[in-house]
Image (tube, helix red, strand yellow):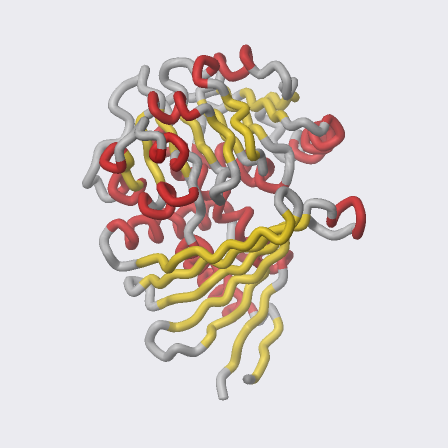
Length: 331
């Protein structure tokens, strides 16, 4: 018999802050870069193209004594037809030593938190010092998490524009996020006319379900840092492949990103070589350079690693045990 703890979304959010999640993601990248963590192949299934899909990501962190998996489903019409979130999922954390499950954690609260943390870590590592302006393409939950992450790591950030094809979502974003970040000037950029906003941005974040590129190469000026978050399957694209070919490329996992990330399209056309892609963990471990100059365009392509979920979920579970939170199940 063993005991397993279950945490809901509200509990996860109360137990782990954005800054703590950034530390967890940092550790996961360093362990992965040092050979003390590994990924297993992603399982992806498209039930209905552009409307319903799912994926399972898994991995192990020998350096932290953990392994586990995350299963996530996306149903586009859930909010309008059923009053349910478009995304749902679970993270299962197990002990490498005993093989026993440590707990199950709500996957969406955790995904938003750790993905925002990954974008923040990349921006802290690769964006120009003194970055003041950002554009976030995507007005959903991940767009909110990305703003929270950027605000935590860019001390000079002053202006943030959000954009999406849905004006209602854009207005709701401002209504919810402006009171949370009174020190920032938040605005909406027109989805069909992003040129001026992109040219002024020091940091650009894309976190949409787009299957067609909408960020043009010529719109990105010298020195911009881009976090490409949305393309986490072979069908998704957000960036012009010419931009990918021009930028200095950084990823969470080279093998995973070349298989189904944003830069895959440029790679398969021979516009970039695998050797041109640097894992962020290598930069954090000072085994590879990051930004080399103020005019360099840097691009972080994040397909998301289960390692981020597992290590952050483990922190939430340990905190919950200390505070007596969650539901404990005897198995």
